[in-house]
Each structure stands twice: as C-alpha cells, then as structure tokens.
Image (tube, rainbow, N blue to C red; front, top):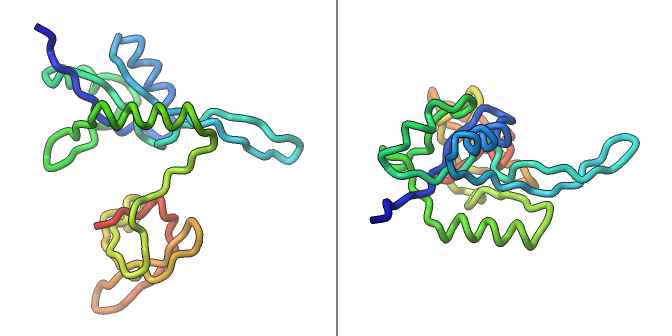
Length: 165
C-alpha cells in the first residue's frame, strides 16, 4: 500500500531558499524551490540570474507523520499554517507553477487583492500583523491608513508586504 505524500510550504531564513532545497535533497526529502530567470542590471553589465520566485519559502513533499524531519534542517523556520495545521498544497498547484516557470521568464509574484478601500494585514516589519485600509495604489507600493489610539496614520508599503484580509 502506497502512503500518501502531501506538498507543504515551509518558511526559510531570508535568502536561504536554494541552500534549504539542497539540504533537503541531501536528506532524501522531495522538495521544490521555484526558480525564476531574471535579468539584473549592474553599472557595467546585464546578467541573467536565478532567483527564488517565492522569497522565504520552499515546498516539501512528505508523509503527514514525517513532517518532523523537516524541522531539523538548518534554515527552515516553520511550516506555513492554515487554520492551525500545516497548509496542504495540491499537486495541481505545484504542477501549474512548474509549467508556468518552464514557459515564462522574469515572472513577477503579485499579491492578490491589494486595491483601494480593501482591508489588508501588514506581513513584516514593526507594524507586522497590524490591519489597515488601502488608500492609494502606486505601482508596486500602496498607501495604507492605520487607525490606532483614535488617530489615523498613513504610510507607504511595498505591496508584497500586504495581505488581503
């Protein structure tokens, strides 16, 4: 009888995605670190570099009772949780990401639903987990109004640092 394996997302230390993927492979743990081909401009040249598509994340495929194996890998901080349990990612979603990256280069990951008047949660920084209302969207940035202490504060945030509520 074949034991079912599921895909899970794990958080990594910043800029450790490729290192974590290599360490998981050494331990015999199936994983996927989606890589993006991006052209970077330096002062004297342009160069094609390989960057992780999802900064701070690697996908692992494990049996449910073997999730503890991942916690011992240096550079892994934790699983991504949904409703109190490690979030299971469907095989079809991983396959779609693979197909998309095989077809296209310089893929941009855009947060879903960062639009004017939508409520968002700030994902990182000193205001992490604060909620606010998007006042204005300016390219890759958004102005967010945060009400606290009966006053309104507005700040500019990178849209990647905002999550719809």
